[in-house]
Image 1 (cartoon, rainbow, N blue to C red):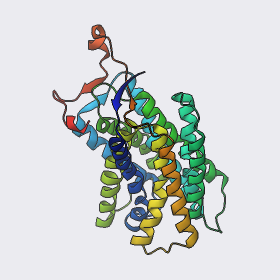
Image 2: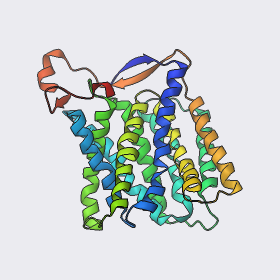
Image 3: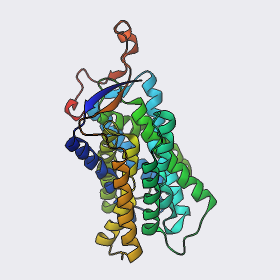
Image 4: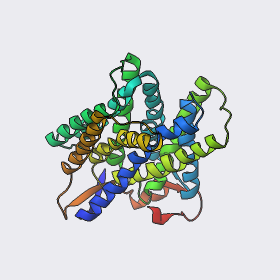
Length: 332
């Protein structure tokens, strides 16, 4: 793998983090939308509706398909970030009452640190480890209740889901993007691959799609367009510009966002320990960014796929345009 470098000033780095942070904040709204608008007890169908339609729309907009080794890479990233992560997330949520699933999800930054050590050759950062532990403690204060019970299958699913998302985040940075392919196209590849992975599971386990009214259609449009297509595009874009471990720490904002939205939109009360937990989780998120922030003016490596030799370009092109001229080049 080769890398290119783009100078990152303090303002541009902070701006990239701020835009990327919108992703977990939007993800935090998914719980409220699911409980208030979507048919109950259909987690796999909901996961399918989040991923596959959005992926197909992005494929149609970008008019690019993966080619060569990127067919396999797109499939792996799609399964890790979408196809396996969504079902494991829902399984943990259904089997672990009291917010235990949220705490397990907060372990993702720790997994990301471990994967980055192996896959990106990043040296272990003590401050990031401390930030991860602080984040887990803060999220625990926000979501845990005294009646929370552990379930072996749910715990395993929660940990595997966190590991899956962390591995996908780190691999997205390690592999970069093929030459000429922007974050929008790469997001479409992953969503489509993940959706196709979920499709047979949803049909076999949950059967035919449920009946839907206008509220359900609106809810699925929101989580598909805003909560998935737009959010994952910002996530993939962020991974291409800042360290994957820093991006992973932003995931701590998701349970924080869910708690705040529940308080504002659903009238759910926040206790004093939860408010303290919100502050601690935010502190862990900020510390995770400060521990990995490059010095002002220092170039940040951006992974890109190795260039193909000119003599083999005709036979080893990385991208296959669906039309003669690719669209949305500005979005790259």
